[in-house]
Image (tube, rainbow, N blue to C red; front, side, top):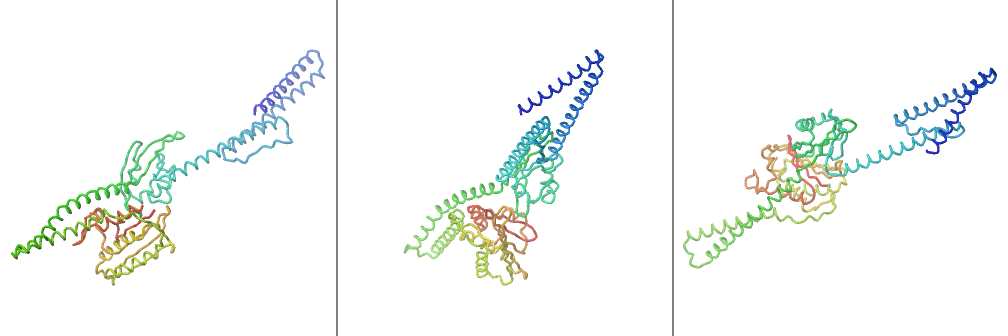
Length: 437
C-alpha cells in the first residue's frame, strides 16, 4: 500500500510540475510575442488540466461505487488491475485491497457472532435482549424453551403465555430481580429473572437472564423432608421397639392370668407393631436405591405397565389409549424404578376415575425439541383442586382414606435421582408429565 501511494504521489507531482511548466512557457511566449509557442503551451496546459480532472472524476466515481457496494453488503466487487492506465491501476489495486480488508473484518465479525451465539445456546440460562420498544433484539434456545415459544419477536407474544409475565418483563428495568410462576405445556415454571442494561449504537437495550429454579427448590425441599423423616423414624423406632418387646415379654410370663391385663398387653403389642410397620413404610422414602440406568423401549415398557395396572386394579370401565411416537422411542433410565413411578400414576388415575362410566386414560410418549423424552399420563377423572395440587408432592400429604401420602413424593424422588422431573399440568383433565433428559 505504501509503494502504491508513493507512485501515485510521484505521478501527481510530475503532472502538476508539467502543468506549471506549460503555464510558464505560455507566459514567456506571450512576453516575447511568440504566439505560436504560446498557443501550443496553452493547449498542452488545458489538456493537462483536463487529464487531471478526468482522472479525479474516474477515481472519485470508483471510490463512491466502492462505498455503495460496502453499504449494500456486496463483497464481490472487484476493479480491474490489468490493461489500464498506470494511475488507474494503482487506485484499483488500493481499492481492491481495502475491499479485501473490510471483507475479512466482516467475516471475522460474523464468525465471532456465531461463536457467541453457539456459547449462548449451550448454557442452561435463558438470555433475552430487548430494545426500548419491546422488540426482541436477541435470544437463545433456552429462553425459547423456558417461555414455551418457537418464534419470539416481541414481548406482546408473552400475552399468550401469561399476561402477568408479560407485564413484569415489559416494565422491568436494569438492576431488577424478578421471580414469577406461570404454567405452560411443560408444567409449572418458576422463573428467576435478572435484568441488566447496555447501550449499543446509541440504542438502550435490556438483557434478561432466565433461570428455572423449580429443580433447585424441589431438591432443597426433598432433602429437607428426607432429613426430617430420618430423624422422626429413628426417634419413633427407638421409642416404640422397647415398648413392643416389653409387652411381648410380659405376655409370655406365666403369671399374667388376669384377662384385662392380657388384653391390655395385647393391645399395646398390636399397636406397637402397627406403628412400626407404619414407620417402616415411610423409611422407604429415604431408602430409594441408586438408579442403574439402561436403554429400554418406551412402547414395550408402557404396554407392560398398563397390563400390570389392569391386573392390580378393577378398571373394566376404563379405556386405555397409548400413543408413542416414534414407535422405537427409547429412554435411558432405571426401568425398575421408573416402573414404580408409572404404576403409581396409573393407580392414582384409576382411583380418580373410580366408577365413572366413560373413564379414559391416555399415555403419550414423545421427544421434544431439546431431545428430552416426555411421557404424559392423562385421565378424564375429576380435576385436582388448585389448593390440593400445590401439596400433592409433599411427603405424608394425602386426601385418600387410609392413604400413606408417600406415593407421589417417592415418584418425585425417583425422577430426581434419575436426572429427570415429574410435573402436574392442571386443566380440565389431570395430566402428569415425566421428563427424562
